[in-house]
Structures are given as structure tokens and as C-alpha cells.
Amino acid sequence: MTTYSETVPRDDAYEKAKYMGLEDFCRYGSRNNVDIAKKWAKKSYFLPTQYEKFRKAIEDFEVRPDDVWVVTFPKCGTTWTQEMVWQIGNNLDFAKGREIYLNARFPFIELGGIVPDEGFFDSIGIVANLPSPRYIKSHLPAPLLPKQLWSVKPKVIYVARNAKDTMVSFYHHYRNLQDYRRNFNDFTEIFMKDLVIYAPFDTHIIDFWHMRHEENILFLTFEDMKRNHPAVIEKTIKFLGKSFTKEQIAELADHLTFDKMSKNESVDLLLETKDMRAAMNIKKLDEDFTFVRKGKVGSFKDDMNPEMIQEFNDWLQKRLTDLNVEPELWKIFFLQDPSKK
Image 1: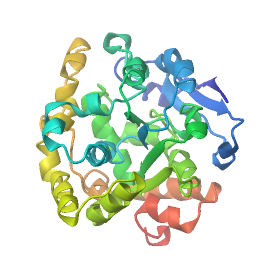
Image 2: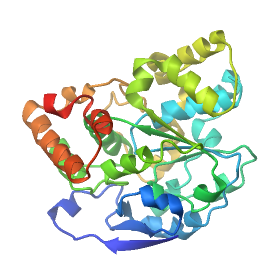
Image 3: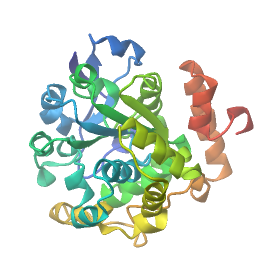
Image 4: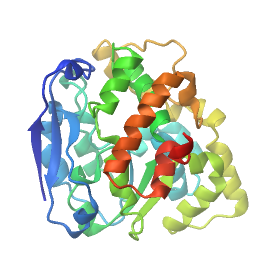
């Protein structure tokens, strides 16, 4: 299993993809010789060329059997899931969780590869040196994750979210944490052209959907977590081989409510990254922006007018049709039957 890079045409849309002063991008893919790769789409993924410094180290990263990974496309409920998983793994140690930033408890393995040199730090080394069991976050698609992940088979929790809410939330993240100076229309264009980091969004999710029956993979959705969080917590507890009382599950569900999460400074990436952003002179553009932003299903309607929604739905419907996606997964992408979109 070896990764490779492809050049990206430098057209007008490419210019709209720039963020944090990063101006050079590639698509990265993998030539896979692992059996599970048969379940993956043959796609390459959009990342800054800064990632090149990390590519080989991530490919060859030494995975441990007791690792716990949370993998998502950005803005699909990653932080929410990380806090849930860490608390389950640490027997609801809320006090310790408040004392230590989430990114220290549950580090982001490829972070150094998606920010400029001014914000550089050895995120891979940080993860490698953690004591077991390690809790590891990644937004990388299946083909770019460490090759040992597929042979060592640690626990992997993947979270998906509907496409429009993901796209809107990612725009606000780009704008306020990644110094993105273009407007929402431009961002929508580059999202649909797979020119946001970690894109394509669709195959990122589809690959893990096709692996959802693997014993070491748990596939969750943001919408299920909103609909019935205690049930998702119970499923995750069982997956991680833990046991809690109904009272403890209710206590964790309360800890993970939007109101409590939005006030929990240990999960606030704006506070945690303030020094790095100051070094790069990055300021949030929306004064009311918070890292735990809305936590709602269907909030895309606050940003997208009917014409934009129709255009986006038409694009997504064509993509999923071309990929021959099964009906159950259509509902995850669309929130509902696409014929009723």
C-alpha cells in the first residue's frame, strides 16, 4: 500500500480554494494491496502540498491494537464524538476532561500537514508518544490512513453527516479558523468541485459505509446522535467493550448536550489554537462564531436560499447516481428520500 500525489489544474476554482496562506494543493491517493481496499472507491483526495511532509510518516505509522480512532470528514460531529468516546474510555472522568484540552487527550494526527509552517508542530510524534490506550482523531479518507490500521485492526469509529449541513458548517470553519476570505458562493463552488481539503466528501463516507460490518468499525451518523443520543452512547459503549448503568449513560448524555458542550472550554478549538492563529495573524471574521457552532440538523437553511439548495441537490443526486449508492445511504446524504428533496 503506497500513496501517491496528482497535480490539480490551476483554474479559477483552484484560486478559490486557498486558505491560511496555503496556495499549493495536490490530490493524494493510494495504490492498495490490502484486501479491504476492494471496498473503496478509486479516488484521490484534495490536500495542501504541506501534507507531503507527513505523507510517508502517516502511511507507515505504527498502530497499536488498543488504539481508538475517530475518523470523519470535517464538521460531521467530530468533537462531539471524541468527547463521547474519551469519556466512555476513561469511565466518565469529567474532572480530568475539563482540565485537559480535547486535542491533548485525543490528538489530531495529520494536523501539522494541513497548516502552514508558521503553525507547524509534530502532530504525528505527539500521537506516537502517547501512552496506551491512545485516542486518535483523523479526517483522512480510508486510502490515506496508516496501512497498519487494516492489519492491526484497532477500534475505529466513523461519523457521517448530511451533505448540506456539513458544507455550511465547513464554510464557517474555513472562514473563522482557516483565514478563508472568499464568500459562501465561492465555497459552495469549490465544495462541489472537490476543492476543499479532504474532498471528495461523498466517497469519504461511502468507503466507510462499505466497511460498516467490519468488527472493528462502528459507523455512526450525526443525525442519529441528535435523534437519540443515549441509544448511540449505548451502542458505542458496547463497541468499546465497556459497561455503564442507565444513570451513567444519562449523565454522559447530559454532559454532551449542545448547551454543555458549547460552554466546555476544553473542547473549544478557538481557545486551544489561539497561539497558533496569533502567530499566523488569523482572526475570526464573525464575532459570534463559536467552535461548537449550532449542533442542529437542517441548519443549512439559514445560509442556503432555495436556488442554492436546488443546485446543490442536483449536483449531489448526480454524484450518488454515478456512484450507484444504495437507498439507505442516500438518506444519510440528503436527510430524506432525494425524490422528496
